[in-house]
Image (tube, rainbow, N blue to C red; front, side, top):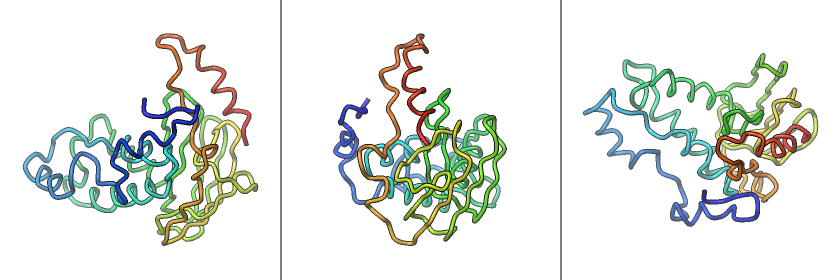
Length: 212
């Protein structure tokens, strides 16, 4: 675990070298392209880590937004073999759907979604907790400049699905390095939950469910 909610949220940035632009997951872009040609059905690249944990939780959500846009634009295509590797049980295709929606279920079993950049001007999701409406002004741009959650301005890079009914994004072609960058804007850490003891996580889940 590289960071937690006790203040060590910047641990991941030095770990990855504080690069001004994150590379595509798996390896350098040229090596990934060569690998795709040689092994078109190889193992899936590590999109989960690259797409959500790398920068959003470390206080640089704009880096995550840029990286996810690059992944969906460069590694996916409407061609035979248009996915970056073996689509094990739909892992790669489902990741693309989440990325296009601008959402991601970062922590399994927790009613929380990490926010990205929606690719559609309007979305309507019928989920277990009810209907979620997403509106994105400037859809097609890669950066989040502003957000309202249930009509209230928000800087948080995540939402509780059991209390969120409407997301209204304002997107931009240029990064807003201040949006979602504060320590309190990052998704909570669940790294302190005890193995085989889900009850140790209940307090944290409760905190999320009360936030709006």
